[in-house]
Image (cartoon, rainbow over all chains, first blue to last red; front, side, top):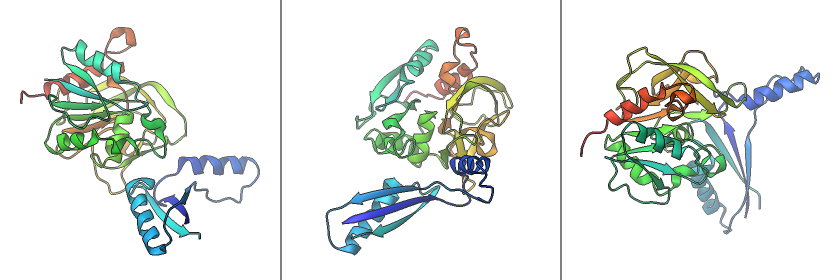
Length: 80
Length: 214
C-alpha cells in the first residue's frame, strides 16, 4: 500500500526557512504572499492491505521517528 | 573515573573532547554508539558533529542507537550526561532534555566566538562558574535555535547577544535535576590559549568536579 505522510511544524513554532522563502518571494515582486511554511512529505510503500492496520503502523512510525512531537504534527493519507 | 565520549557515524568532535578532558587531568575514552552498556564509566559526553548526516532532523536517528539506552539510565540515575552541539540535539530528540533545536533564525551557519553568561551554577556543567560569569567560547552550528513550546527547561547559560533566535537566549539547558545538560557552543574548543580562549575549561572543570567516586 502506498502511503503519504505530511509532517507540519505547529503554527506557533517559527519556521526560519519559510520566512526566508517568503522574503525571497517578496523580492521577486510577489508581495501578496503573507506566509510560507515548509513541510516534509514522506512517500512510503508498505506491505499490507488492511487500511486500519497500515494506518496504525504508520501512526506509530510518525510518533517514533518521522515527526518530533515537541514541534510537529502529522497527517497520514492512504493512497491505494 | 572515566567519561564515555560517544561516537556516532558522523560525530567529529570526539577527539577534541577526549583531549580537553585529558589535559585537565580527567580520563575519557571513546565509545562506539552500537555498544549496549556503559559499565566502567561514570559519566557521558555526547560530542558534536553530524550524527547520521543529520538525516530527517538533527539527532533524530542517533537517539535510537543502542548506546542511548544506558545513556538514558545514567540520566535517570543522576549521573552526569552532557551533550555538546549535536549532542545537545540528540539529548532533546531522546527526550532527556526538554524542547528541540531548529534552524538558526537567519538560516546562517554560525561559526565564531560568542560571549555567554552563566545564569545557573547548579548543574554538572556550571558548578565551577561564578553566577553571572561571562565566558567566550566558539559557536559552530546551523540548528542552534532552541525552542521549548511548553516553556520547560532550565536555561543555565545564555548568549550575551542573540546570535540564533534561541528562546531566552539559551546557549545551554539542563534537566530539572541539573545532571543532564546540553550546550550549543563548544567548551572543548576553548581550552588552550593557542585556540584563542581557555574559557571552556570552566565548563569542563565543572564537569570533572561533578564526578564522584562510585
